Structures are given as structure tokens and as C-alpha cells.
Length: 453
Image (cartoon, rainbow, N blue to C red):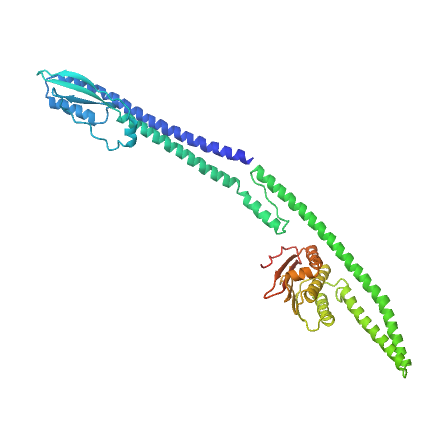
């Protein structure tokens, strides 16, 4: 059902209930007014009887008391009866000032021309009296004020009921928005597995369906992107492996042959200083080139990650070799600490290579571009073996220096490897200076815990 239709139906229902209640209250008020009118009309007879008895020989005081009783009983509507003597003195009680005759009552009758009607009465004893009918709009004004107040209360109650019904209906109809907003928040955080259930509102179902479709499309695109990144990285690793084999088979053999020849020349040039020095230089240069070649081969295809190994020793050994090579080649004084604690967690070969390459790139950034003197590397897995966390912290120039130092390519490669392995990456400033790189990868289908802020 559409949201507008639902709201209109509920408002119509509340309106009908409110109108029915107003009709009932109005009819009850009318019934009370009719009862008052009937009661007043029934008092006309006793009033006529009391007036007719003024011509009898009964005591005048009893007639005055009867008329006062009719006036004070409140049963006469629209008028009062007064009895005056021949000198115009009032024999009946004057009308009392009503306590409830407030501003509204006075305002309603302010412009009325209240004229009295006088009837002469001759007593059997010859006393002349005057019977005066005085208009009394009090009952009409009270009735009008009561009706107006009743209408005001009814309209106010209807308005309040409609407002409450509208608020409740809108709140109930838009309650699924909380789930939609939560799903959007999860989509923003990269959780594309979220799905929005159906509600009873067509517009919200359309929004939820669109978001579900968007999540499915994003999931498919992310999966395709990860597969593409996997293929690219597999191609890179394959090219590195081929290059390492070529260097090892071709250049390694040639350099070994040059070393053998230089060693032979050294033995044969004994006693010939110039030739011996040349042979010694040839031997040392070939040894240096061969050492650099071994280091390059270790970077291209690190030991422990060359086959299908998926255990802690392969990744730990490769990382230890990487740290040792960087110390020896770049800066022996670098304080680089490595902590690998994977327990019984099984690390897939692709993920092991990705972690190795990320550490390799992070060390390059820290040593060459951030000018760090201390690097802390930590690779850990949880006890259940469901996720792996990599942390690289240095005391260099910080995030901007690391990003600018490598033109952004190194960090882009790190992000690609994290994305390809369904991981999460966070880059923060270390204290008091430097960069903290934290990447977390799933080792199972269980969702990753959120990275600490």
C-alpha cells in the first residue's frame, strides 16, 4: 500500500470516530436543552395559576412567595415575573446577580433592547398591583456559551486526535526507514552483503529494492574487481618467477663462470702485479654482482613462498629474510622488529604473498621516503584462525611524506592487495611521529571485526 493511501485511510478512520463522538455529544447536549425547554414550558401552567390567584382574596404574601419560588427555581426561561405595588415598589425579590454571568454572557447581550411588559392587576380589596414580565436572556446566553465551548472542545479534541493519529501513522509507516538507514550505513562501510526486508509501504519497498539491487551490483563488481586484481597479481608473481629463473639460469651461471675464470687468472698471474690486480678486481666485482643478484632474486621470489606452502613457517621465514636483507642492503643500523604469531591459522598462498609484498612496500616507504629509524612489524591471527592482522608502524615523517615519497603508487598497490584479499586497511599517524599501517584479512567466511579507531 502506498504511504499516502495508508495515511489517508488512518486519518479518515480517526476522523470518522471523532465525528461520531462529536455527533453523540452534540445530541446529548441538545437532549439536555430540550429537557430544559420542556421543563420550562411545564412551569407556565403554575405561573398562570399563580397570576390568576392574585384576583382572589387570599393573602398577598402567599402569592408573592409563589411567584418568587417560580423565579428562583430557575425553571422559567427567557423571562422573570415581578410584582409591583401602586407606588411602583417591588414586592417580589429582585433578580440576583449571577455568579457565572461573566464577560462572555455580558458581551452577548450588550446590544439587546430588553423591554418589559406590564399588566395591571386589581385585587378584590381594591389594591392595585402591576405584574411585570422582565426579559431574562441568561438562559439563552448560557446555552449559547455552553454550545460554543462544547464545539471548541470537540474541534480541539478532533484536532488533537488527528495530530496524534498522524504522528503515530507516520512514525509506524516510516519505522522501516531505520533499517534502511542502517543498511545504507553498512553499505558505506563496504558491507555489500546487507539486504533490506519488505515492509508494508510501497515507496519504502521500492527504496529497499533499489538498495538491494545496488548492493548486488556492487557485490558483483567488487567480486569481479577482486578476481581481476588476483589475476593481475598472479601475472606479476609469474613474471617475477620467470625473471628470477632467467636471472638465476643465465646471469648466475655467467657470473659463476667469470668468478671461476678470475680465480684461474689470479693463480696464473702470480708474480705479475698488474695482471694480478686486474684479476682480483674481476673476481671481487663478479662476487659483488653475484651477491646483489642473490638479493634481487630473493626479492623477486622470496624463500618459503615459492610453492604451495600454506603454513606459518613459510610466511614467517620469508618476512625474516626480507628484514635481514633490508638491514644488510639499505641500513644496517635500522631498528626493525618483527613479530609473527599465527598459531595454527592456515594462511593461503595468495594471502601470504600479499602480506609479504605489503610489508616489502611498507619497508621501502619507511626507509627510503619517510627516513624512519625504527619499524615495528606485527603479523598475528586470532585464536579461532578466522582473521589475520598486519601492522607496520614507523617513526618517520608520517602519512603525507610516505604518500608523496612514492608518488602514491606504493600505497595504491597496498590498497589493491588488501582489496583483492577481502581485507580492510587503515592508515593513521603514529605517536609521536610516523605512520601506522594496519590491514586485516579474513581467513574464513566470518565477518571481520571492526578495526579500532
